[in-house]
Length: 160
Image (cartoon, rainbow, N blue to C red; front, side, top):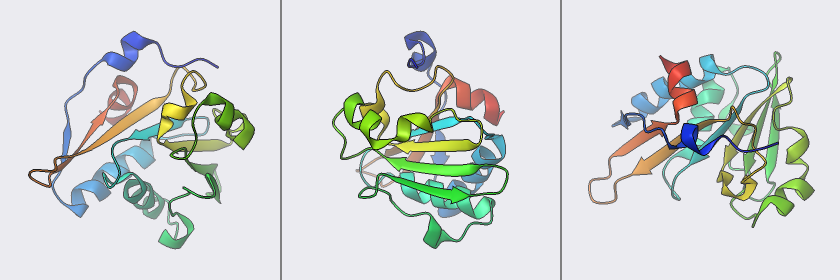
Protein backbone atom coordinates (compact mmCIF):
# COMPACT_ATOMS: atom_id res chain seq x y z
CA UNK A 1 0.00 0.00 0.00
CA UNK A 2 1.15 3.53 -0.57
CA UNK A 3 0.35 6.79 1.10
CA UNK A 4 -1.97 9.35 -0.43
CA UNK A 5 -0.28 11.43 -3.11
CA UNK A 6 1.42 14.52 -1.71
CA UNK A 7 -0.70 16.84 -3.87
CA UNK A 8 -3.97 15.54 -2.43
CA UNK A 9 -2.63 15.52 1.12
CA UNK A 10 -1.41 19.09 0.83
CA UNK A 11 -4.76 20.58 -0.15
CA UNK A 12 -5.85 22.86 2.65
CA UNK A 13 -9.48 22.92 3.73
CA UNK A 14 -11.16 25.36 6.06
CA UNK A 15 -10.89 24.64 9.79
CA UNK A 16 -14.08 23.55 11.53
CA UNK A 17 -14.41 25.35 14.87
CA UNK A 18 -15.04 23.09 17.86
CA UNK A 19 -16.08 25.66 20.45
CA UNK A 20 -18.05 23.17 22.53
CA UNK A 21 -18.55 19.47 23.15
CA UNK A 22 -21.77 19.79 21.12
CA UNK A 23 -19.67 20.93 18.13
CA UNK A 24 -17.43 17.89 18.54
CA UNK A 25 -20.47 15.60 18.81
CA UNK A 26 -21.96 17.13 15.65
CA UNK A 27 -18.73 16.69 13.68
CA UNK A 28 -18.37 13.12 14.97
CA UNK A 29 -21.89 12.34 13.76
CA UNK A 30 -21.15 13.75 10.32
CA UNK A 31 -17.97 11.71 10.08
CA UNK A 32 -19.62 8.51 11.35
CA UNK A 33 -22.38 8.84 8.74
CA UNK A 34 -19.77 9.37 6.01
CA UNK A 35 -17.69 6.28 6.83
CA UNK A 36 -18.16 2.88 5.24
CA UNK A 37 -16.39 -0.45 5.33
CA UNK A 38 -12.87 -0.25 3.95
CA UNK A 39 -12.32 3.35 5.03
CA UNK A 40 -9.24 4.48 6.92
CA UNK A 41 -9.50 7.71 8.91
CA UNK A 42 -6.38 9.20 10.42
CA UNK A 43 -6.54 11.57 13.38
CA UNK A 44 -3.60 13.88 13.91
CA UNK A 45 -2.98 16.53 16.52
CA UNK A 46 -1.07 17.14 19.68
CA UNK A 47 -1.69 15.39 23.01
CA UNK A 48 -4.99 16.54 24.47
CA UNK A 49 -6.39 17.82 21.18
CA UNK A 50 -9.40 15.49 21.44
CA UNK A 51 -8.65 12.54 19.16
CA UNK A 52 -10.02 9.83 21.45
CA UNK A 53 -12.91 12.08 22.50
CA UNK A 54 -13.89 12.37 18.83
CA UNK A 55 -13.77 8.58 18.38
CA UNK A 56 -15.94 8.13 21.49
CA UNK A 57 -18.44 10.62 20.06
CA UNK A 58 -18.46 8.67 16.78
CA UNK A 59 -19.14 5.55 18.84
CA UNK A 60 -22.15 7.19 20.47
CA UNK A 61 -23.51 7.86 16.98
CA UNK A 62 -23.17 4.09 16.36
CA UNK A 63 -24.80 3.36 19.77
CA UNK A 64 -21.57 2.07 21.32
CA UNK A 65 -20.98 2.54 25.05
CA UNK A 66 -18.12 4.96 25.81
CA UNK A 67 -16.45 2.26 27.90
CA UNK A 68 -15.82 0.20 24.77
CA UNK A 69 -13.96 3.03 23.06
CA UNK A 70 -10.98 4.20 25.04
CA UNK A 71 -7.48 5.22 24.17
CA UNK A 72 -5.68 2.16 22.80
CA UNK A 73 -2.25 3.63 23.57
CA UNK A 74 -1.07 0.52 25.42
CA UNK A 75 -3.06 -2.14 23.58
CA UNK A 76 -2.38 -0.38 20.22
CA UNK A 77 -5.62 -1.64 18.64
CA UNK A 78 -9.18 -2.02 19.93
CA UNK A 79 -11.87 -3.64 17.80
CA UNK A 80 -15.60 -3.02 18.32
CA UNK A 81 -18.23 -4.96 16.35
CA UNK A 82 -20.71 -2.46 14.93
CA UNK A 83 -22.74 -5.03 13.01
CA UNK A 84 -22.28 -3.62 9.51
CA UNK A 85 -18.53 -3.46 10.04
CA UNK A 86 -15.93 -3.53 12.81
CA UNK A 87 -14.50 -0.30 14.19
CA UNK A 88 -10.74 -0.73 14.43
CA UNK A 89 -9.38 2.02 16.70
CA UNK A 90 -5.60 2.18 16.66
CA UNK A 91 -3.19 4.45 18.52
CA UNK A 92 0.32 4.48 17.06
CA UNK A 93 1.78 6.96 19.57
CA UNK A 94 4.33 4.49 20.94
CA UNK A 95 5.36 3.09 17.56
CA UNK A 96 8.50 4.36 15.87
CA UNK A 97 7.87 3.57 12.22
CA UNK A 98 6.39 1.33 9.54
CA UNK A 99 8.18 -1.80 10.81
CA UNK A 100 6.37 -1.49 14.15
CA UNK A 101 3.02 -1.02 12.39
CA UNK A 102 3.60 -4.13 10.28
CA UNK A 103 4.55 -6.23 13.33
CA UNK A 104 1.46 -4.96 15.23
CA UNK A 105 -0.87 -6.72 12.79
CA UNK A 106 -2.72 -3.49 11.96
CA UNK A 107 -1.53 -3.61 8.36
CA UNK A 108 -3.88 -6.53 7.61
CA UNK A 109 -6.87 -4.43 8.74
CA UNK A 110 -6.10 -1.21 6.87
CA UNK A 111 -8.59 -1.00 4.03
CA UNK A 112 -10.34 -4.31 4.85
CA UNK A 113 -13.91 -4.00 3.57
CA UNK A 114 -15.39 -5.32 6.83
CA UNK A 115 -13.63 -2.66 8.91
CA UNK A 116 -13.44 1.06 9.41
CA UNK A 117 -9.99 1.87 10.75
CA UNK A 118 -9.50 5.01 12.82
CA UNK A 119 -5.80 5.63 13.39
CA UNK A 120 -4.50 8.11 15.96
CA UNK A 121 -0.91 9.32 15.57
CA UNK A 122 -0.63 8.04 11.97
CA UNK A 123 2.94 9.22 11.30
CA UNK A 124 4.32 5.79 12.23
CA UNK A 125 2.31 4.31 9.33
CA UNK A 126 3.95 6.59 6.76
CA UNK A 127 3.90 4.81 3.40
CA UNK A 128 1.47 2.08 4.55
CA UNK A 129 -1.85 3.92 4.38
CA UNK A 130 -4.16 3.44 1.39
CA UNK A 131 -4.17 6.25 -1.19
CA UNK A 132 -7.78 7.22 -0.37
CA UNK A 133 -7.13 7.68 3.35
CA UNK A 134 -9.41 10.20 5.02
CA UNK A 135 -7.68 12.52 7.45
CA UNK A 136 -8.52 14.96 10.19
CA UNK A 137 -6.12 17.13 12.16
CA UNK A 138 -7.34 18.37 15.51
CA UNK A 139 -5.86 21.62 16.73
CA UNK A 140 -5.79 23.14 20.18
CA UNK A 141 -4.85 26.78 20.52
CA UNK A 142 -2.94 26.88 23.79
CA UNK A 143 -3.38 30.63 24.21
CA UNK A 144 -7.17 30.64 23.83
CA UNK A 145 -8.10 27.01 24.53
CA UNK A 146 -10.10 26.97 21.28
CA UNK A 147 -10.20 23.73 19.34
CA UNK A 148 -10.67 23.20 15.63
CA UNK A 149 -10.56 20.36 13.13
CA UNK A 150 -9.07 20.45 9.66
CA UNK A 151 -10.17 17.66 7.30
CA UNK A 152 -8.04 16.61 4.35
CA UNK A 153 -9.57 17.05 0.90
CA UNK A 154 -10.91 13.48 0.79
CA UNK A 155 -12.78 13.82 4.11
CA UNK A 156 -13.95 17.36 3.34
CA UNK A 157 -15.55 16.06 0.12
CA UNK A 158 -17.45 13.41 2.10
CA UNK A 159 -18.66 15.92 4.69
CA UNK A 160 -20.26 18.29 2.18
